Image (tube, rainbow, N blue to C red; front, side, top):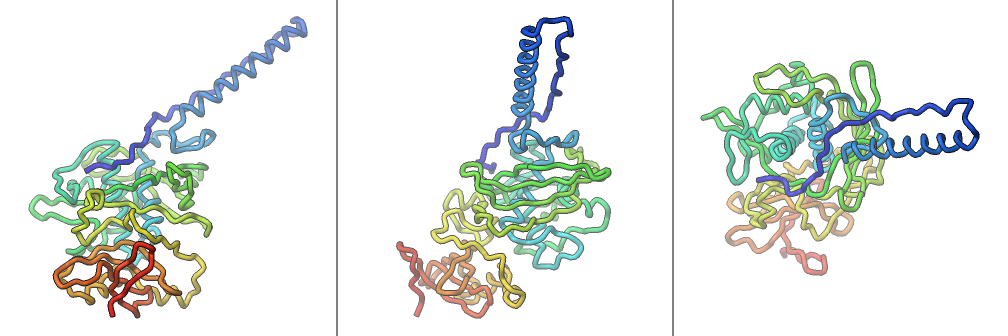
Length: 365
């Protein structure tokens, strides 16, 4: 129940650059040249060591705040959430449809922390990592400083929520375990802003180095004061997706069930990694188109009306057929003649079909 992506973790310890004084005025010119050369060589060697000692998620010249360490994980969780879900940072202004962004980021952070920092799970099963309420509040507080400040509450958790569950008998939150594949966060800039720090970070592919998104993130001192030991020195107070429509489509994070190719659960962490047709959503939609676009959860409700509630549905990806984009859901069940149900992004068309080996579609008559 762990992430498969292995990330090299190195301690963040930037050593200072040693300075050597020039040779005295009484030395010969040859000795001066030799000393200068030795200085240059020593300085270059020390600079190289500084870069080698820096964590692999940061540019060598970027200086991070003290006790940064574990903060890479909540930053990475938010970046993966933004690239995968496309929602803005969850805040007091977020509506009910955006609650998934909160629970998704919590699920990613829980899995990352469980794998790379400490195992704080109370229990596990095939789908979820269960943590205490205190741990859940701790994780939420580092992702969303407004929670620790009392300005933001956990969104309402639905019985059929995709990424989280609550167990009343032992007051535990369960967060779906999953895999973010080759996506990794990388910090490119860090500036002090009073008592805060403003970071610029990118979500990259560890193998191809493609950039999936660029983000501006504000860190403030962590004010969580619960019973759990706090491994985070800071909390995220602002998270902004920077302008840029040239980013490649992010690969899909997957749940463990997808890794095992069972695909029996209707709730998946994000889009399937084995989609045969990927379509990058345009960032140049006009206001009218955006207003008419339904959410993934709304599309799922329409998909379930096609073959009925008894069939099993799972979100796969976005596909383009003709001039229109569709949410694509896999479907299984008795008397189900198709492998997929496509729902147009405007909610007007719901069709069942099968994708052929050449990428074309055969639809129900």
